[in-house]
Amino acid sequence: MTAWPASLRDTRPPRKPAGTAPQGLGATSRRDDWWSSPLGVGFWLAVLVLYSAFSALLWQPLFGAPNEAGPYLSPFLLPFFRDLGLPFGISPAIVTLWIPVGFRITCYYFRRAYYRAYLADPPACAVGEPTIHRGYRMETALPFVLQNLHRLFLYLALVLLTIHWVEVVATFLHDGRLQIGLGSVILLVDTGLLTLYVSSCHSLRHIVGGKLDCFSCSRVNQTRYSAWRRLSGLNQRHMVYAWASLVSIVVADLYIHLLGLGVLSDPQILF
Ligand code: FES
Image (cartoon, rainbow, N blue to C red):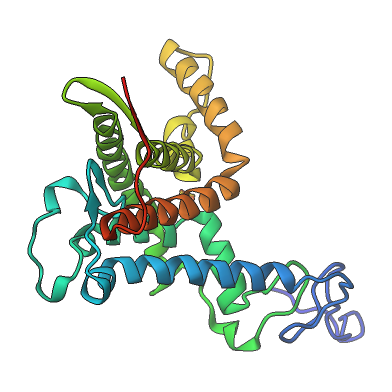
């Protein structure tokens, strides 16, 4: 390759492209309260995650709270594993908890949330990030390459979701009669929100409508296209469903544990 003569070479230092955030952690030209969002997200995410860990490990050993009450089973548990008899009163939820945890950790929305809140990478749009992240190789090397397991967790989450629906329907039936208890309604809302969260997943959207060159070329492709459009509509609210389903699972679990302890009673109507 021919080298340019020295007189024609541009020796000026490279200029930052327009719009590039100022360098250094927290450096920004923004004048709004950009820090309030990562702060709030980090706080509430920690509260909900810590509660989930508490429920799996400490509810029973510390307070003797059973994981089920009447027809209700904690949404952290699967019915097949309810009687494992683990030592120290550890909840059998621990056996399957890695599935929803893995699904949420690798979720595209939650990645953004905790990258911003806990790694400050970056803390917000147009805000400088720590320079220690310069060796970051995105999701092509350990540990972040594991984020690519999201699709696998999605398949497992779909199995769990199906089991949850069977469980919820069962709570409405009592000796062949319809029974509506507050616990059934709470579990119904929780499973409904979880369904919206899973259905709005970016990965599911890609499975349904991705890798198609022509949407109208066959009946199958047309069906996939219309399903993809519906999922795309849900996908726009993925963040809302992500939070709502996280809060609802904690509320449902808390309600069932308090029922089991006798702190609450479950109002019911029997038809
Ligand atoms: S992207 Fe959030 S659950 Fe799949």
